[in-house]
Length: 435
Image (cartoon, rainbow, N blue to C red; front, top):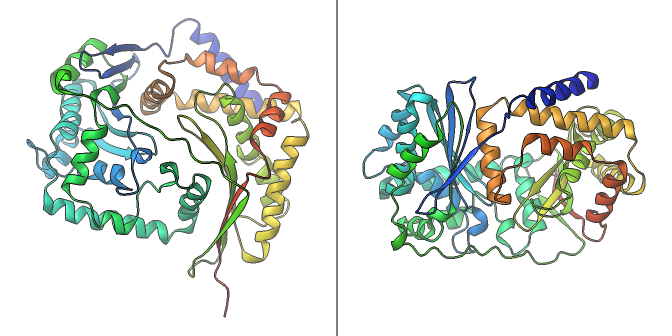
């Protein structure tokens, strides 16, 4: 299997010398909006997204959850379309529209045929520039979001991650759950939406990203036509991203009566998206949980049989990041699970990874990147995220080269850089005890 992956990567690299598979174009409009596009000749569809540099990290203690709530409300009616017309507009043409909110950005995205590009830009701009936030819809949507929060509260495998981030970034907006808190969502009004939008939804913080069978100049014309901001009337404030306060060694234990298992997250803060060790950390993460042959799966699930769900994750932000290891187990094995997780952390710090293991993981990472590029949505996402964090787009062969150049000593060095037992945050969602 690993040989096949390496052959796939080498074949792609050979072909990529004949034609640049990741060529992109960029235009910054007079009103400050950045337009990015990548033409793909062999498809006839387009993925397009309007990315706003605003997410839950831009909230305060008084409006936690508003970025996510606002994303919902954009679909509830505009000056020109009802919510039913919004839902039908692209779907009647065979396309689709949706949105998501993260900690640092929000995205309204669409999939369409290349001949429906203008309609997609029209609809996305209408949502972002002309939403009316009708009171009746706002009251109903508060109930929907509160139901979403309740669903997370009833799903310990989801709740544990919110608690982990809350503990990893205490007293900081990075620790806020994206969906917010029920009591605060219940108090949202139209002015809460418009105030957050006025503060953060500025053209200088907009990126229009598109990938597929697309003409860049045509895209620019449509964005200029429909995102018709007058920059002279705008005074966008600088985005202030506060650094999270330092953390100390501590453990938080939460009890939820409905649980039959313990859910555990152990992790620590790392570094930003722009750090030169980013791809080394992604490789380290893959060594821990990259597939069935990974260390966590083999040494905790397969060897000891004490956790059905085990894995690690990495997140990067503008000026910080985090890595965590998650496990679900029963009460009697929770202590042993924590000991085994800590053992894996010590192992990767104390002993260089074997070359054969590293080569297998690098092949897995490279093929994952390249296979992902077969999706226009993934390519559109990559264009936007790289520009948000790097202000430039790296060619794929450069990213592949960075992974290929990673050595065992690099993995050990980064493990020693990030893992400090004094700063490991352990969050446990306990199983209920029998009376």
